[in-house]
Length: 271
Image 1 (cartoon, helix red, strand yellow):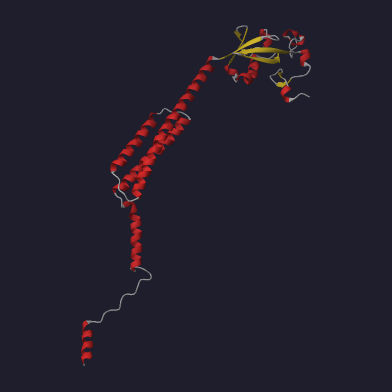
Image 2 (tube, rainbow, N blue to C red):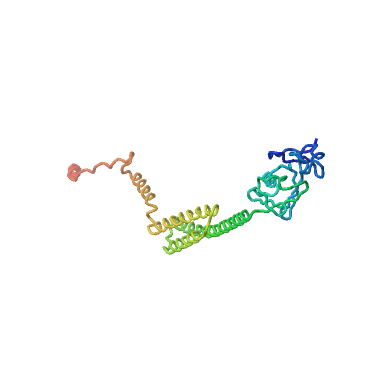
């Protein structure tokens, strides 16, 4: 029994790819009398050599096979779709519907495979587009790196504000201007596909940072506005501690005796 890697395949009439039969070497093999297209057998097998650039592909097919069937087999060997192939025999391109036998292809005949110009142009265009996408992605990465540095400055400013120190407004103006420059750079990048997705995400990120800088600038202009809630809570707790409005408020001090009563008490003391 043959190992899987030793199995030979052949194209049967109708376009079916099957395992090569043992008797094919005797009746339709290379150099065998039954392999020639002149044998008159519609199922006779022939071997053809297809030249494609610097490569050669040896195929074993029925002599009645159409050139279209041959192109389907060549897809596995060349990665060229049938619509992108041109098969020439004796210097002439053959239509897909014509059979090998009709045009005179015999055992050990040679064919020439060319790639259609439209396919070459399409591949060049695809390669160019991929190159443009790659360059656009690199440009977005450069902007992202610059934005990361600006983000560090913004974090430092926020830490300063949180520490109770007021910052010059110019710091916020300059930071906003630098972020807007990065937005302009992103807008100038012509992007498609994945690069377009990355650019859009970075634009949203920069816009979000600009809003955050505006918020910090407002806090810097009115440092007490961000602490209003804390002051309110502190005031409430101080109010409760003083006893006003508290459920456990201390009792008021007893009233002092009137001056007349005090005088009477003094007279009684003298008596």
